[in-house]
Image (tube, rainbow, N blue to C red; front, side):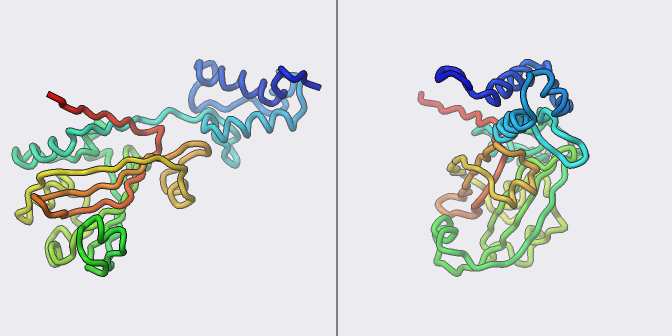
Length: 258
């Protein structure tokens, strides 16, 4: 029996495996020793090993897959989101050198970038209407995206545009995606110049749809961003749910107080 000051055996096993993973002794992507090997290594029962591995799984340090076993979670590229990314997009539109903020932040080319999309026309619910500052029921073009970098799903989002602004234009055509220059270039093609962007950032645990679409291991939260894009005083685009796994994003904002 452990003493009152001694952690349970499974925690001691987990602590040591965590140390090995974080130090690189168990490299990212490598398979953990078998349950039998860990039992012999630590002198514990199978149930203790399973509790220890389960704890590391909940922390997002290991992943268990049927037919492969349990392995140290690979380190994925981190996307850095800075306050200047929309300004960069606007500069690209003006110069004609179009990419997207996504490809720039990921430092990848178009050949490594893919966008799954689904478009539909929907009436604005109460929350989205408030973000647009329009009446509930106003018709919107809703666009659901999953962004992939080098084949790995990195981000998903729901972005809405006012339907009467984009109906019967190339912007409403899903086959035109991905659109070089992103929202900034799309709106510019309609004669609309973005003058400001407001974002609200939160964190939470992912729901099942997000876990499956973005391949999020257990224990990893997501960063969510709600965005309002302005042209003057008018809100011209709303992203109600930009979702990024927290281990794949770094928020990097500069605030000039001079």
